[in-house]
Image (cartoon, rainbow, N blue to C red):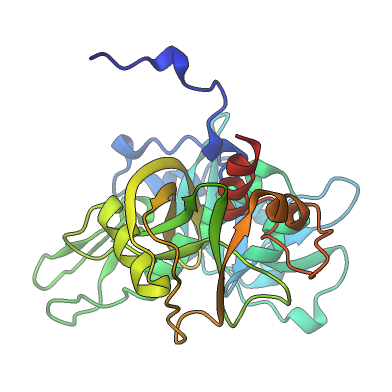
Length: 311
């Protein structure tokens, strides 16, 4: 049986979630030991600037999170630890960590944590996506300064996309952690849970990390059963979302619930319930009489829930 690509939607669901707007040309096959140095010397190079897990934004008539080299000196950039993210119209884009005192930061500059940046629409979708890429890469470097095999300080190369050990010649590459996020469905109801760290009234889809040697489908079944006691049958892929907390890929699916009795894992969830389609419509509109609500629209959980309601 052939695959009917014409039956697929023109707009991928993954393109509608936050952090998915990154349009940088990565040119991964041409990264080498000289790539970053050449990019730093380019006359139109631009930088995304980070202070810890926050990104610098200039909020004026044309807000932006990209900066020229001569704008960086006030922020003590660590150019020796910069990472080449890619290019836009031939202009390199580089992620760089800096030393910024947030309390003394003057207008029009402001630091945004990645989640706030996602929901604020302070900069363009393309910049938000590139910021997520840079944030994940800088965190990976910060956590891998030493060779995991022999303990020798490692060196960044290939534009920042590899670290080499000068002692034992080990090489380490950036990691992405796969996370399944799933909406379990049974008839006209869907399953959502509430974690202790959620804002008041929030319920969302269940989620969990894929373990070594596990398929996406089996991770969905395992995580759903562990957290709620609900057994899962069929699993259908829906969309994915880059998630820079610190370097995950959310893999969104809809799945078939085989039973209804919830046996909640109290260590994971403080509440877990079935919600009717009518309930969910009210939750999306933020008009539910009980004050319960769904995650905001830029989250893949929202996309999973909204798609089910609209089917």
